[in-house]
Figure (cartoon, rainbow, N blue to C red):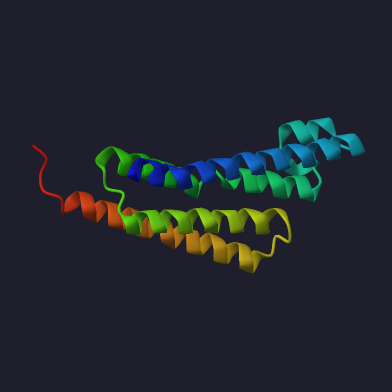
Length: 143
């Protein structure tokens, strides 16, 4: 039960990462078809892409920042069998915050809303780490 429950938010986070990647591919393809790109600027960095492509690229890059700590923690919680109900609620809240963050990022890119979603997710992830660390540190010694 807890294996599936712990992995489900991980699967959703992975699906979000792929959805953002596909969005990035679509906006890049559209920009390429529209023409006007300077090859050297596009190949060497983001500056040659239109703003919508840079926005999607930044959103994709962001999927490998905080979520990495989430992935590591999910694996540790599974291996140590310390995925409590509260841990799972916090995991879902983190993933939901990442969905909101990505949606805002690739649509309106409203900084206030985006930061709010990011900060909420960061606090949920911090709470997960604290909860996990306490569970490990306060657990009886293993034989």
